[in-house]
Length: 177
Image (cartoon, rainbow, N blue to C red; front, top):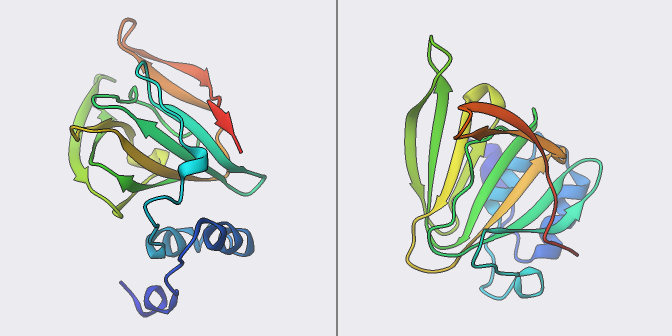
């Protein structure tokens, strides 16, 4: 951490986070998302669960950023995907997640190049130049993660296992605040 990161006060609430994000620009988002510590019940009004697939629950969607709570049941995972050219920070609210990063090799095939486990309050960062990634809930319980995108992502490329190629996917929400 540099000295600027220490000067960011610890944010205490979701409203603090939204206000601070709205006043800042994307160069400050990393410090902001790292600094907040949430109470266990912070997201109660945004939570929705599905046994079928993780849920994307929109908290804020404006021209500058998108803030989404994703609720995962045990074993849920994303497809390998990009972020439509936008930056993405993921903060673990509850549970544990495995992130696997992929790159195309000289034959154009995807290969896993790195896997990490993230736990409560840890933050990961992804942008398309870093490759593609997949997230998976590896805890034995339901888990939640907060996703901050600068700017909002309306479409992304998702790896189709059957055709072994990427397809464009329009992104939607399960719930909207």
